[in-house]
Image (cartoon, rainbow over the protein chains, first blue to last red):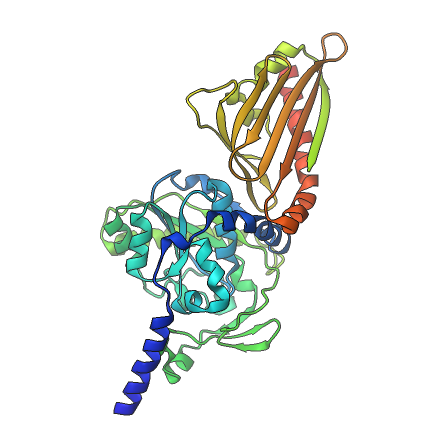
Length: 277
Length: 144
């Protein structure tokens, strides 16, 4: 048993030591500006994205943007919203996104840090908000993003509501960001939480899921660690009215969930077909 | 890319200028306008700044602009300060008696090299439609 514990500790140390320390200065507005046309092309032609309600985001100062998350390890909603935020407020406005440790520590994804992506933990989130930046979080994280495709219009944070405490501590409003379409970019079959437990990935890698899906170009895709080619699903995003953190955590969380689910239902009602939109 | 649309409005230049020189009237005739805010203390004239975004493709495109030419009843021109490189101009000239020829011109260039160029080419049709519709709305507004 001692050996197994040692191996687990060693593996955890290897992963944690590779997670770069959050350095907000790594965000590079000039780099983002140069990338916007390419992302605009993909968002406009491939995902036919439609983003509404950006004017509801406070024009300045720190704000916590809380979204429902879809699309596995290649989430089009994050990509499209980042483009929309940077286009609307300009690349000059500091904007950060929290992402899973494995995402920010993967060498091929180092460019994400130039977009303002930092590892998802409370310290980094406070760092971003205290610096006056806007921060995008997906509390549902790897739990929500791998939900089965037939639950694509269900907002499910898996009971996580630490974001409310974060907003309260930082004294910032919460702006819900509802989106649909991402879960149609592949056929997600199962979260694979049982597989994550079986392989102890939940303890070693903070991976609560090893999802099973049908995705391009792999066919049967287990774990989605190498990503996939998303289907050209139409992405629709609705930014909602800010919510002040003035009740207990559960009450605020319920308000955010109700707002997000309402937005997702509205957007889903406008869709006639999966993927096509 | 440079896009230009023209129209003739059945009103004199002063009547058209009254509309195009008033920042408050832009939301009522500018098509696909997603955001329009006066961002300087000076509301109009050379040096006045506005935040303007048009819905082009999937997201609002634009940025902070500054008026660089304000030639009464003749020319109103601006340049982009943030966002895509942008120059715009609304030009008023006499047409037949009691009519004004209006030219709306937009020159823009996205950053990002070849991808920026492709984005510019793809956006040009929608930008052209936006300019054309804007002039139709302006014509309706002035002639009504």
